[in-house]
Length: 183
Length: 228
Image (cartoon, rainbow over all chains, first blue to last red; front, side, top):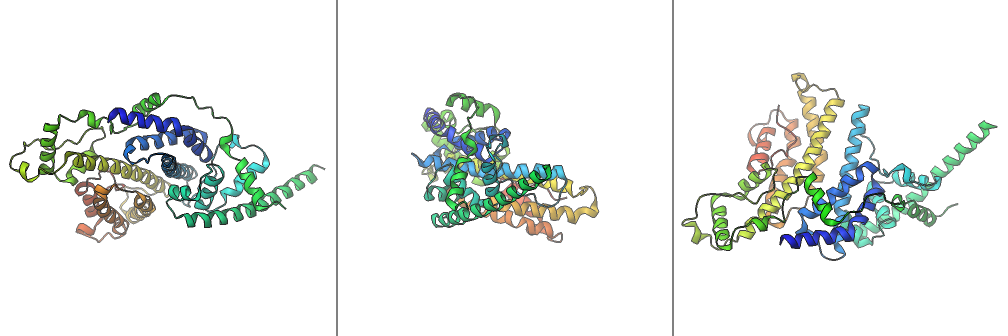
């Protein structure tokens, strides 16, 4: 059984390591990514018997990664809270990917817009746009119904566009003011 | 004006993982070795390798089930950070052998493994909550040694525990220990109320619940702390 487990783990690692790493890079600061990925694979190793066969293994790993990222978010928020000595709850850094990876003002605006969405709505959006998951797979990752996924995706798309337009207008107005000031 | 679909496309393009990944590529064996050396990874895969020969194994399982309950087994495992197969009972099987002969040692092992995994998850969640609680206490400048600050401290404990309950609730316990976990969780869920009620006594008090969770259910270090 030992060698079988090693082989099974090796298969998971080879097939999904890069995908899980990309998942974490999309959601966490650079220095947290390695730990998060390691946690995912530690969990996979510990629970090899629970990892489903075939493509469903990736969905299972995404589910673990989703919870681990949530844990990292809470840790980050906690550190900030301690640092600032604030009693109020710090907003979760929904879009906490490494800033240096974000290219261009439009991308920065759209990520900021996504960060303003409700937690699960934003996650549905990320899983659709970045992990390219189906509604059923997203439902498995988030442990909600496929119907709820569809509703949240619809709402997320609508709100993302609304927030984007708002941020874009603000950015243009700010640029105009700055430009006028220069003159 | 930019449309909803165009914004979504922008969002797709803004994928932070599109940038090249600078992580060193390694093979599965090396990565597993790294995980082993950097964590207290339970030796799930090595358990079968250390199982004695079938005959002895059957006798051990019978002795195990006869000697200790699942709860005590869980307690033993959760107190021990080192990966190990279930250390159960040294009493040689006597008359219980016939009574219990249908008991499968693999079942006992499944329970042990499941409980070990679950307790590690619970402990990890509670460790994070405890850290959060300590941060809250520090932020609110509550002196834990000050008797006047007892209610503020208890309220903070209750609040942090309440925040943790959804995470604990979301844990999926393997079937073999699901009932046990449901019972444990129901006691943990009573803890915030207990913290807020300094007049509670016995099993309804924070001390009573902590005792039940940590000792009766074997989830050591899984209640954020001890009553002051």
